Each structure stands twice: as structure tokens, then as C-alpha cells.
Image (tube, rainbow, N blue to C red):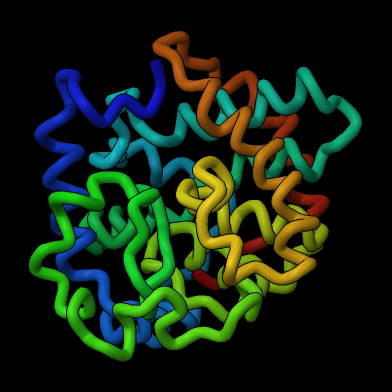
Length: 259
């Protein structure tokens, strides 16, 4: 059973990560993180170097696995490769999608890097994991600007205009856009919203979506099949797989990128 947030050996760690996230992620906080990381001035490195950095990271929000995130990247990509052998860009999305978690390697606390994402600036919905118990101390909870159904947004404004809780999704999306990587729009959209479980899995926040979001939802759902259901203790042989994926990186995201 995946995404079991009720019990398990990692439960205390997962709950604590989300409690910190849901306490501190506010509109002001998210705007500050966007300002901090938008220039992509932290480092210059290749995609493969960023992936290798994830050897150091075990995701504290994940109730399913406790091995380094770099293995999950190859698990996801390889399963996509089996099902969609001709869609090399989608395979690369599988490999890349969590590399934004390098923020945690650089010292950002995991509660603002990993885990499910959700909109800030409007009412926190019941579809958010641990909604009932972890938002009590969030300053935006009782702020009249942000506590109504729409908060600071207009109906059907489009997710592009919605401020999401800060994390690896938005960061990696910004890195790929800044470096003008050659991935299609569907790929960038999957990367930007793959952790938005309240939307793509629970069907919530449709009142903020426009027609583009609804069209892209099928791609995010397709990607989620591989992101979630490939996690297992059977770890891939990374060295054997690297040459194939390096060719995809060279095609779509070549050279040293600004991070």
C-alpha cells in the first residue's frame, strides 16, 4: 500500500515534516523562496551531477521508502521506458522530476523541499494530507485575505497564476525554464505539478483551473502512475543505465546548467 500516512515505521518522521511544512509555508514565505532561488545562481552543474547529489538524500516526507532519491529517479524512468519506449522526453521527465530536491543537499530544510504541494493564499482544503492536525499555527489560516475559498485568486484563473507551497517541483521547473531546456510543455507541466496530489489525485482545486490545466491533467495523471508505483527495494544498476540517460540529457538539457 502506497502513501500510507496512518501507520508505519516512518510515520513519526513523515508527520513531523508535514507539521513543519504546514506551519511555516505562508504566502510571504513562498514569495521569499521564489525570490531567493529564481536567479539560479547557486551553482553550475550538469543534470547528471545533480542526480548524483541525490545519493545523499532520503526524503523525510515519503512514507513508502527510505533509500536515496537517486534510485527512485532511475526506477521511475525505467518503468516509463518499458511502457512508452518511443517517448524519450517522458523517460527523461521520470529521471529528472525530483532533482529539485538538491535544495535539501544545499541546506534547505526538507519541509520546504519535499512532500505534497498545495496552494497558499486561499483556504487550505481537506484534501491536503494531515489537514486536520497540522495547520493550527499557520499565520495565514485566519488571515481574511487568504482564508476564503478563493482567497487572493479569481475563479478559474489558471494554476500558472496560483502560488503553490514552495518545494522541488517549482524550483526544478524554474531551472529548466531559465536554462531554456528543450523539453515539451507537457514535460514542464508534469514537473511543476507532479506533487500536487490534492489536485491530480483527489480532484480538488478544480475551481482554480482553466482549460489548459484540465487538458494537462491527463499528462500529470499518466506520470503519477510511474512516480508512485515504481518504488520498491529492488534498486536499479545506475552505472549500467547512465549511458542511455546521458544521451537523453544531451538531447534535451545539455551541458552545465545554472541552478
